[in-house]
Amino acid sequence: MTREQRLVLAIAILASFVAFLDGSVVTVALPAIKEDLGGGLATQQWVVDAYLITLGGLILVAGSLSDLYGRIKVIRWGLIGFGVASVLCAVALTPEFLVVARALQGIAGAMLVPSSLAMIMSSFRDAAQAKAIGVWTAWTSAAFIAGPLVGGIFVDLLSWRLVFAINVLPIAITLWLLVQLGHKDVRKEGVRIDFLGAVLATVGIGAPVFALIEQGNLGWQNPAIWATMTVGILSFAAFLWRQHTIRDPMMPLSLFHVRNFSWGNVATTFIYAGISLGNFALMVFLQETGGYPATLAGLALMPVEIILILLSSYMGGLGGKYGPRLFMTVGPLVMGVGFIVLLTVTPDVNYLTQVLPGVVLFGLGLAITVAPLTSAILGSIDPSQSGIGSAINNAVARVAGLVAIAFLGVITITGLDPAGFRRALITTAALFILGGVVSFIGIRNPIKQRADAAHE
Image (cartoon, rainbow, N blue to C red; front, side, top):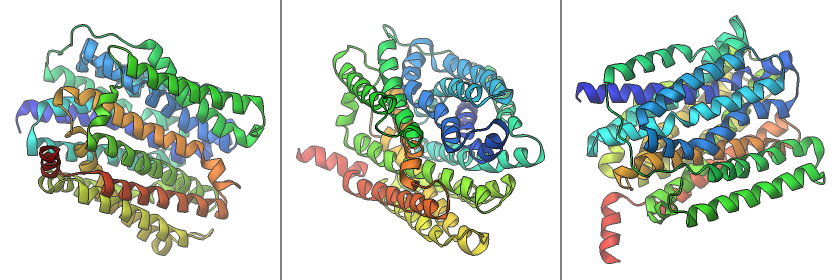
């Protein structure tokens, strides 16, 4: 690996680390935020989903921005914007202010992930690319899992407000590494930003999420609920129609004609919905029912982080060598078994006998899955489309997560009490198992893909 490749990989990891860390770090702080600022389960859902709505809705626009202005410039804008929004989160005095600041964080976060992964795709080739994606996946996934631990330490020892300050150091380091890289940005001529498409996508995602979260308070019969849901569905349908008809779409629907890209994104939907739903439910239940302090709740998922760091790069290499289908099938099934094992958890929560076995299985399945999943999706399309391909896949993952959390009230019925927690666990396990089944049915290893193409 050359010095330039090492710098690119470090920048890609740190830039994505910031976005993924803040996507999960807040989870463990939700009980403290509720106690300090007020609000019930709906407020907790909004603190998480406000970030995911803007991240998921605008991540496609960020792909266009990186083509127009260059990936490095867009990453720099994203890092600076994320830092400013984090400070606003830290000083929030009302739930409404915090939700708005979280939405601003999502806008900045949308600029980071697709551009950083596209830098890897353009700087590495073949087996080296698969291994680099494995390393990126290990660290960014570890950020998603480590967030609750880091957040828990801040909540217990200092303040939940400082949870939003932990990304200052990685932001500063990444900005410095961008200077050291010294790359000239590559820009595409004639790129146009589809602002109307961005509005339609954001409304199409945000309005149904609003309806799903607030229906617990207002009821489905309330016009604010069914009208918002209707507007959201129509807006998303209009977004898809626009992508099919305009000259330079944010989301080229032709990419979905590629088998591994389309089936891989379906698998992503189930897998990342399960990850978000399961982590949210476990973190809140351990604190509010199990009586765990925030730090111990965060530590509950530490085995997952360790397994990811140890195995993700290795699994990425194996996926590149043998093809992704087996890994994308077995991994989610193991994750599903892990959450079935968690059904043994009782309100007094014995970590060693009730939580740890399921968490270890979840971590092992996640390590088996994530790098081959990313490689299967992005490796199936032309490298010149890696930026938009990454943006689409990340948008799918984030939207799947926010919809899963928005459905939490519907799934649990009674909230995250023991009965509701069990329903959340069963739903999470079912999502993982569906992800594995979809992968088995739809994913093809590269050699088989070429053979299929020859027969067709």
